[in-house]
Length: 339
Image (cartoon, rainbow, N blue to C red; front, side, top):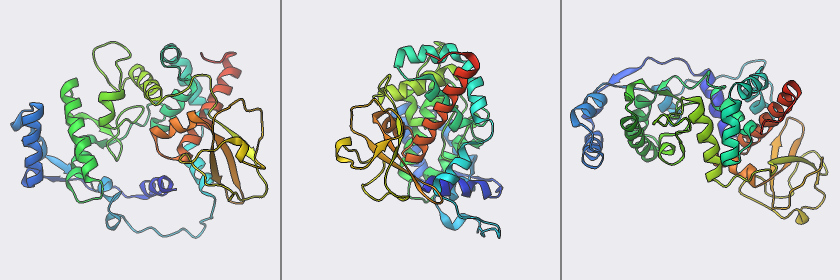
């Protein structure tokens, strides 16, 4: 999985000295500034000051330019494992479930309100925040303005995308009255507890605490915005997300797997849910590769909705599994399912 390789790369990447760079020397930056002034009424002198003091982010740039990455040698004790085993090792850190239970209890009022307004179960909102920012403890340390400037104007295959994200980021900070230099986020410019990209702000972030601001670093706004995001992508209340199924053999090669393919269950011969599965719609076959076998799951419409947040089958499955573990332990500890 690409995301696994990326995360492993980030874990081993050395700290790189940030280099100040006057980006106003680039013609495309000057054109960008003029467009922001003309169409969005920015102050030209303030933008020139920002871009002339930007710091080149080599670590972020190296994600898209392999030649910038340090060479990695496989350790002597390196053991080959399945991609799902590696993925779980990264995201199912010790204490992730317990901290999720604590988070749900602390923010239960906002989670219940979001559930009643948008129909998204609290454990799934909590799971997203747990995976994206470890419940707010790790929201990213990259300076978002510098990161987006680097990716927007240094050569890489996603320049056009990041130039648009930079535009949306500057518009958002102007609207919210925030200094662009003070915002920290991920290596890709994602912000806050739910790690929303700037372009998501205008469409999906909501002022859930009614304070006149839309801020993904605020727990109440983040909870409401994640639930709103799922609702806008047609999350179906009270419907399952996934269930594990059995199939003949240890490796599955019968049908195409992943969220891009869906099937009538009647057409999937010799595949049987391992537990009661009350769902009548078409399903996706989700394959999780372990060291010595493949796990196979049915994914529902709601599974597909989770992949709109991150286009990865593994990511969506991790959100589901963490959510179910949090829900189960919450019920055991507090004697209720949060609704």
